[in-house]
Length: 193
Picture 1: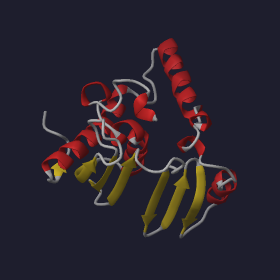
Picture 2: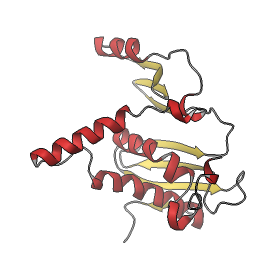
Picture 3: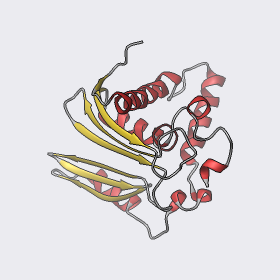
Picture 4: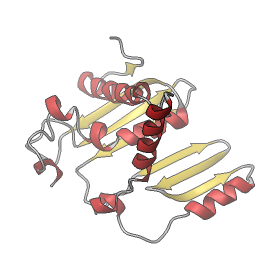
């Protein structure tokens, strides 16, 4: 049980949030990277399966981006173990569906050689529930690349590719989600300080 791994887990003061802040933060990073700035969010959260925690174990947010696109994000720690992380992008010129690190669908109106290459390299492989059912199966490749880049940035005096300001953008989106869930109102971004 995740929340039994430390007394700080599941608390606002020390954990900073629940399923959105801890389990979905990297998906928020990815969503922001794909779609750009967020204009507003409308969210609902609840604690349904873990009685002793303060934070949410399930939530959903509707997101309006500044470019006019709409998005939906779901986060939970109350699903049966093995639920895989899934990202879907649907637009007038194509669709991309990625589950964990595997491409389920990569389809565009005007296909290029690069599209075929991506499908061949990342098409879904046979496997189990990944890190969702076996934490030792979580890929750490992305973290390693970030750490290597950070070390290189320190050594050369340049800024890292992903800096604190980028991370704060995702935290602000999640804080807006929490504010919307608490007030039951649409919350505009950027948040007022």
